Length: 302
Image: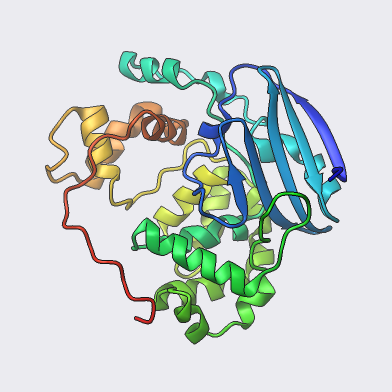
């Protein structure tokens, strides 16, 4: 299918498309990703759209878009693709981290423009296993949304209005926990108020997102990394973050008790680029996870 909008974007410096979109799950029905391509369905002020990028060569990225919002997406192609981020040559300042950067250069910070759409899957991942998040995301999106425009087999993200109307009981039938449902409703009611966070300076964007009941530091940190382009974002409270930092930065037993102060101290040398550092650690093998008994999968009607 011929795209409604198309651009060829020059690539300056190294560009790792897969690493740029790290932590976005393959099982999200609103996106598709691979080593050399990435596609995302979205709702824009101009209407629904699907945008896709493909690595045509080492120095050119093809940007395609379909649907009423295609032109809107094309105007923001650099942000959506991650090419707006010129911090790819950040100084790791440590020989070990410098070697990791040599192995995985070019991971950028994407800016997907819609904080509501970025936050919904993150909320579904609060305090549950990934498989439970994926299940809830699929069931909810299939029930409440519709196919996205274009040749890619994707669904549009659930619209704020549709999410605001759905009952907590129905959300629970998709496997959404009660506190997650309350947060999703809060997000839906203030979705338009959150739109400026896509363009605000990082600290101001954080304060705006944290004003939403149910959205805490972990959710805001993950949103900053996954779709808001925040180079210094940290998902404080992440279950595996203490073990990751203890093992990779401090070289101590990840089973040891790790305080927030210790984590802040270990990350301090990279202030301004802490999200870049975390993406690098995740992409090169995040190290041992915290030891805990594997929880059984929750029945969907709990």
